[in-house]
Image (tube, rainbow, N blue to C red; front, side, top):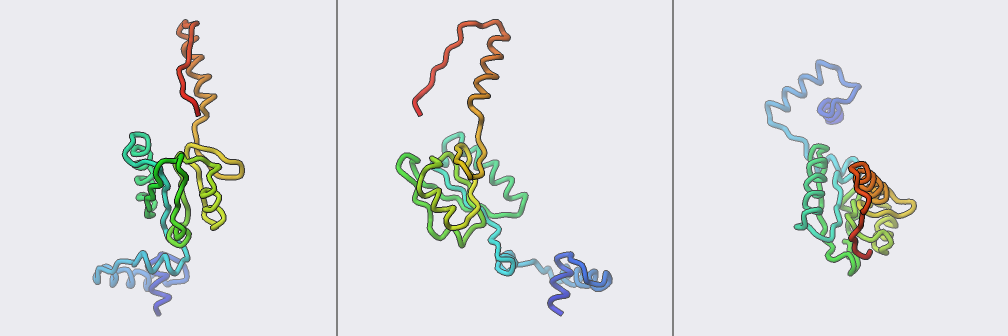
Length: 169
């Protein structure tokens, strides 16, 4: 039956080992490849994650995107890149994202932006990268802890006149 073939190709139980091996041999002989689109339709999952980013070509974002793409490829997932432009101008996220992806990574965009909340209202899994918001998953650097470690390193080297040049937030 088609159900038996499906279970055998997916390596699920309830299939006689001899039958499962026969199904795999026939599939190999026919160069059968599972259709990702059909599998995703059947599972209700898209197998994709959208990445909302203000810039693509800047070093930080290009490096981050390279790492995200590598991890997603290893996981067999698709990446949908959505460039939103300057983060100070607001986000214009595609309203169709909820039907195209299972989740969204939001790179260095203000967490208070209403569009970020809009993504959550669409019941998408949203993770902020480089910013934080109460009640949301996030990945960011603890700048205060980093400053303490750097300052302590300089003190350990014998420096006692330590300054900071920084910009406004």
